[in-house]
Structures are given as structure tokens and as C-alpha cells.
Amino acid sequence: MKPYILLIEDEPEIRHILSELLTSSGYRVCEAGDGEEGMIRFEQNSFDLVLLDLMMPRMDGYAVCEKIRRTSAVPIIILTALDGEAAQIRAFQLHADDYITKPFSLALVLLRIEAVLRRSASASAPDLSPLLIWRDIALDEQRHEVTKKNVPVSLTQLEYGLLRLFLSHPHQVFTREMLLNQIWGYDFFGEEKAVNIHIMNLRRKLGADCVETVRGVGYRLGKEN
Image (cartoon, rainbow, N blue to C red):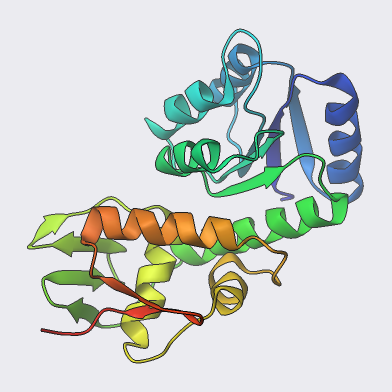
């Protein structure tokens, strides 16, 4: 069955353009004109992905994202005119999966949707790979679980993917372009700020030294003690 997308956007023209784009690209679409309507639609149906504006009447996108995350891990892509770092950090802390700023390329939106859906399918697939361990951090690929000192740590799909990549290649340095290609699933479009934010979140949850910055190059797993 074709993926079902919930589009929550208060600007009718943008909503119409996106709905036409998604429908013509083979997706099923359910539209909502504000956050409250979006939550009603979400609770009435089962969706594969949510496209979510932030600045909306009645209930803003942050509140919608937070409410969805209480009960669901459905992929959420933010579409917004807010391009500041603080806005992006808040969205990712609420476990949004991707963040696209307006004005945006329609081709880019489709590419991001495809990448997020692929990542979601991969995360839900069974994986019998061994346990990956670094210091007191363990990543169990079979259970899709991360622990620190045997205490479970909640990571987003992107954070989990980054950690898994670093643990699988402990001595390799990854540029931001490489991380976008391997984790985000699309070519480099100048979105290095998104990489920085997710690295920052990993350090906040697992320790500042879990990911090392290689100045002028990129990132790699921190050194063992």
C-alpha cells in the first residue's frame, strides 16, 4: 500500500502545492489546516509520516510534535520559515526526524521524505548483528536499544544511526557530507547545521567525549581510555 502522509500546514497555497506534489508522486495525503485539526486526523488514522509546520494557530507545531511523540514514533519532518538554530534544536529535542526551511525546493522535499521513510523501514527491520560497545555505552542492534551504564537511553532514529555508524567504524573520521549521505540518506545540501545539532544531542545524552571533533575535517568516535 502507498505510504500515507499527514500534511499539517496552515497556509492553503503551500498545503495545496505540497498535496498535489505528494499525490502525483504516489503518496496518499491527509490534510489539516492547523495543529488541533492535525491531531484529530492523527488520532483517527494510521500514518507513515507527518509533514508539520511550526507556526500555526490554535496549536503550534512544537506542541503537535510533543503530543505525537507521547504515543508514536512515526517519522516527523518539520517544514517551517523558522531557520534559526534555537528553533531547530527545539524541534530535534522533541524528536523530529528532519527539518526543512521555507522557501524550499519541491524536489528536496520529496528527497527528504524518501530518505526518512527508508530510514524508518530500516530501523524497524529485524537485525541480528552483535552488540556494539564503547566504554560504558552499549548498542544492541537486535533490540534496537542503547544503554549507558546499563541504563536505557532514548535516542531518535538519526541519533541511533549516527552512534551505530561511529561504533561500527571506531577509527574512521566522517565528514558532514559523509554523515548526510550515510545517515540522512541524501547528498550534501549545505545542511551541516543539522549534523552539528544531532552530534550535540548525542554528546548531551551519552557524554561530551563520546564523539570527537576532528578540526577542519569532521567527527569520529571518542578515544578509549
